[in-house]
Amino acid sequence: MKPNHHLDESTLLAYAAGTLEEAFSIVAASHIAVCSECRAAARAAEAMGGELMEQMAETAISSSCRARTFAALEQAGLYRLPLAQPRGTVPRPLAALLPVTHFDGLAWKRKAPGVAMFDVKLPTYARGQLRLLRIGAGRAMPEHGHGGEEITLVLKGAYRDHMGRFAQGDVADLDEEIEHKPVVEQDADCICLVATERPTRFKSLAARLMQPFIGI
Figure 1 (cartoon, rainbow, N blue to C red):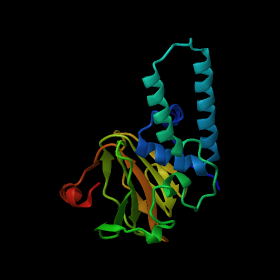
Figure 2: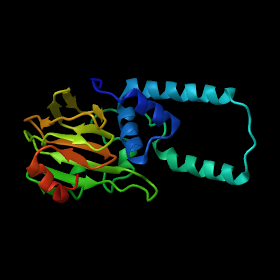
Figure 3: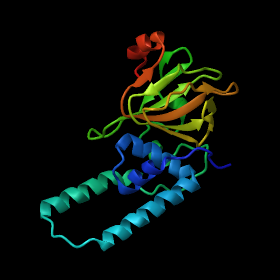
């Protein structure tokens, strides 16, 4: 079964251009690895970018500029053009950053009843935050918005909100205008990979008071 929720077109273009921030690039690459539709769209965007570059007039550059460019390409190489893989496995772009090969072996930090988190370490130059979030079966997250961009990839289980059902392989590519209240389905915990630009905006006073302790 193919994913039903995909990356936004602007996210795909930024990913193809190599301008997507590190945390978001990892989530995008992890989704692209299991989604043939977004994988084809990313390759098409990269091909279009290549054609545009070929049409540009040649300009001489300094040796230092060339060195910086190749260094940047080496840093970005880990998440470029991920190979296709079946859903249900840990996406390779994420697996390369984890200390273990399965979610049960991670040192999860309990943040609230039914909610645990694992911070994914990023390179020191990276911007944004990347976390694994595990929410218990039947649990609901408080209604909230986002202080900036947020991309969430479902790795295990499923949740529902006013935008529909998000199951394994689906991605929620949200901006600061979206508010929602995800509710995990009753049959299993839900594990998500979440990239955020700024802290979450919770609507309720209780959730806002707890936010410094929860850390999202």
